[in-house]
Image 1 (spheres, rainbow, N blue to C red):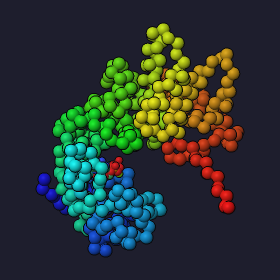
Image 2 (tube, helix red, strand yellow):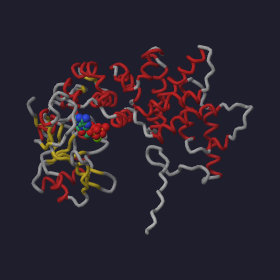
Image 3 (cartoon, protein in one colour):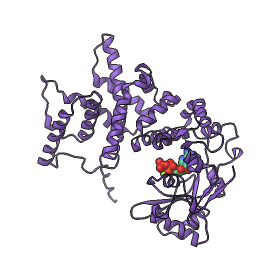
Length: 424
Ligand code: ATP
Ligand code: MG
């Protein structure tokens, strides 16, 4: 692949769309005699006219050189040192150009799975170690040029996700890249080019070699940008879902595959994300599991067995959540909001406090799941609105009763401070 430099007159990326803090970092590095580029997803998004989520910089300055230049710099990472340059409202991640470690530098060469990623390299090597051509572009602030070592610009123009290098090798080096391919294809509405797609079909089972927490993080990202339905259809089509979440793939196989009700759940979830603007992970996974669990319940019932739905939830879901490395607080909350659904049509014979129910900390997600269920069933949202009003009423009357006003971004209730150690 020949490297190409695209002058300012031939591309649409304007400095005005680059965060001033990222510009500050690059200009300061350049003034000190280093090379510094804007890299990765931000260049891709700027070319596409989208607003980048974050701005990453790569440079030939080493982490300790970066630290000397920026007072607000913190070095992180043990395997590969990265500089986090902190500003008021964001962090500019600044990394030193690196290359893929040679195979014999790793673990004997047989197993391609990457354990180390800590060799510095040239800018070109840094582009070549990245996952997809669309993520391998550099923007350079001195002459406002785009530097393309990987053919990324034409792939952006043709809306293609293509591995840099041989996809059969790149996916075995780091199987999480297969989920990333699905993420970018669905989020950007791109196609995965045939060689990359076929490599996913061939190597999808290798995803089991990746660390579960990393996979879990990537799965959550599939729902950002309201692209969850598309992403899960692609996971299912490529076979990745059969390895990642066999229970859900199994359900789809039994529930008309690409015409399953699960897609209606995910469509409405995407719609909610589009309107509300954010995604509560607990709700995402509850929406994902509701139809499959109901299906199991129906199967028992058809076989003439009595099923206690909440007992089934408590039976089926914890092992799946543990396997996928879902944090315990999240799985507990997810199961609770799923179990809570029966309370919207309470058993008249049992005592039940509606006000106590709506005052629950997890009521907002419980109600959101109920709303999704009504939408999936094509029913009127009136009942959900009545419950919502009751919640507002209770909140207004007894604000201290409704806990969880202070929440972390993921919806996790704030941690209690550990008790102070007494000095001896
Ligand atoms: P997003 O907008 O979702 O943040 P992104 O492209 O910035 O997308 P990140 O996960 O933030 O994705 O990663 C930043 C960059 O690091 C990517 O654009 C890519 O160049 C590189 N990268 C990330 N993960 C990998 C990987 N597993 N293998 C190779 N390169 C990677
Ligand atoms: Mg990013």
